[in-house]
Image: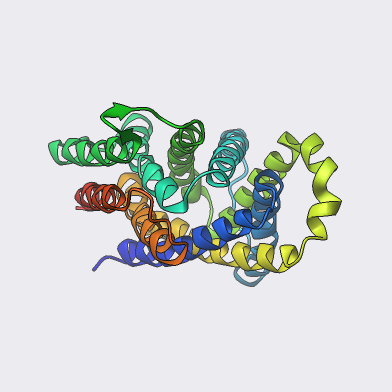
Length: 285
């Protein structure tokens, strides 16, 4: 079994836990935009001790700095859309919608990195799109809810960000890139919503368990992304690594159903989750 595959699977466990805890925070009234920026910045700060232990390595050039800044904006936009959408919809539903990121990861890998586009990948796309249509269709009508569209849009940004990660990690080591990428994305997101954040930061900081949960979730995401970047460094293709990462969405859907008791349209969610799983597994192969 290849090393990149083990890293990618390890990231799934931590991402699913992170997603579940994040949804629980939003149900308790935490602001998704302030939380998203603070969380990403905190992950970058948490990575600093690892960089001090293992050393800092990042090839500074006009190209890498430009891509890093673009990546910061891309991830800030992705998190803004995703967290705001997640705060307004079910975790199980959002998880299945996010599986479309694998499609966009495949497309961006083909466009930017020249990765092959096979008939098996086309079949995988059909499965994933079928899953989306199944959960969005109701009474024989297809109508996307407003917040579902936010999550679908975030998937595009996340996929583009994954391709940028794949480029930049070759100019750095995983922990150094983890630090600079999350500090960049977190700072960008906090600045993007600075006026909104300024109005609520004090009241949010006084909310019970805000700091504790922020630190815990940041730790989970730190471990997850460290494994993702290590998978890229171990020669994993962006379409393969990102597809396995999206298996988290299937696990998260089941966690939402079982733990958060999201039983609305349950049969459709289960079938959709299986379709998304089938599509993502075909991408893995």
